[in-house]
Image 1 (cartoon, rainbow, N blue to C red):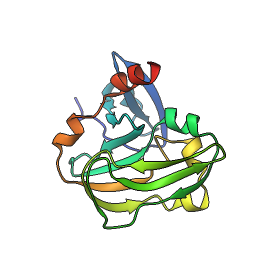
Image 2 (cartoon, rainbow, N blue to C red):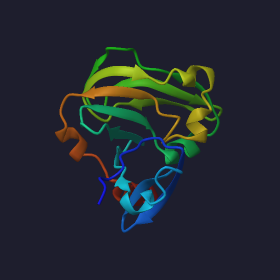
Image 3 (tube, rainbow, N blue to C red):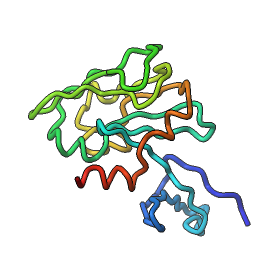
Image 4 (cartoon, one colour):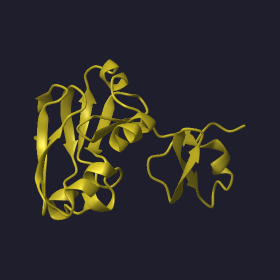
Length: 164
């Protein structure tokens, strides 16, 4: 049996629900049976409605706002991106999102060093509305303490949290 496919972006993809976990499946003309070997794409969430997803090696995380937050904000018109090489602690503000309804700080879910920002948001802030947990990501961070990730909510826990 072939090794699991690890992908963040693929030619064609679909989200499926298997048990209580969401998985991202890659399907391409090269690998027609990829749906049998999907890998779990595990995001973790904060009570402030940010998410983080770790790279395969667990040293870098991608940060963004949740779909719930994007829907609550309404049409995003401006994003203040974080400063490169900024050392942060979990819960620190690393930027802001402004919409037609309100403005909100972006808090980092974990401690570390900001290593990248989605500069596409400067030109097209509406990417946050179109794909808050995809193309609308906000920052990359070099994770200082992986244990902080474990303290965040799983997708299922976050869904329960937002329904309360």
